[in-house]
Length: 237
Image 1: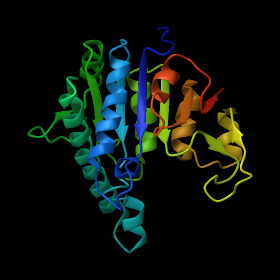
Image 2 (image 1 turned 45 degrees about the vertical axis):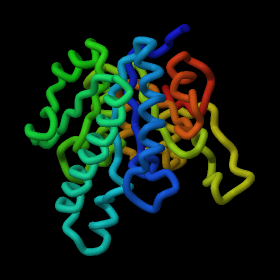
Image 3 (image 1 turned 180 degrees about the horizontal axis):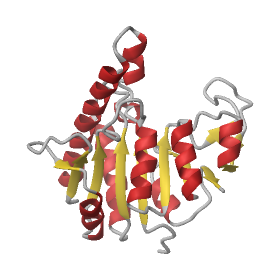
Image 4 (image 1 turned 120 degrees about the horizontal axis):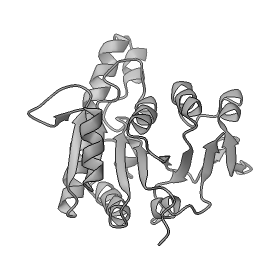
């Protein structure tokens, strides 16, 4: 099978791990995600993974209720570590050697994030999960995903969502919503499309790093993406 993208950064939302539950981690969903990742590793793809924390704690939501923003974001970053450990467990149960690397040092739980070590893990065929965002408040896990993609020199950023791409308006509400097949970074910023935050888009634009937005709930979509099939919405120069 032809592989178009050898090294990728897979960005998963915390909400995606909930499945039909109202909060937390759905065991069936995380097992499914692990199988999808295993499928591409078997083909020699090197995946870095970043997971959000919306299923456990969202920093901005906490701040909006009177909590100090930096404190709320720190709590959100710790929640991403919980999600990362859960995915590590699911991956290792499928036989995939996995490392969790945290931007906030917690050596008794996972490795500290060191760029060169992360790259070495990927070269050895291990899945690497980047936890705790950038390690700084005021930055989203979208920005963290793009940052890590640049640092490991990923060929593609895959943003896995609940919809099959980027639309001109919310397809869950508007039946006449139109899906974009391709967008430039500037179009995303000018149209204020809620793909990911502006910081993440700006980082990707500066490095000309392509982003592919696809539906995580459709089996085989990640496989199609790394083989270069036209799927979802591609954001590039």
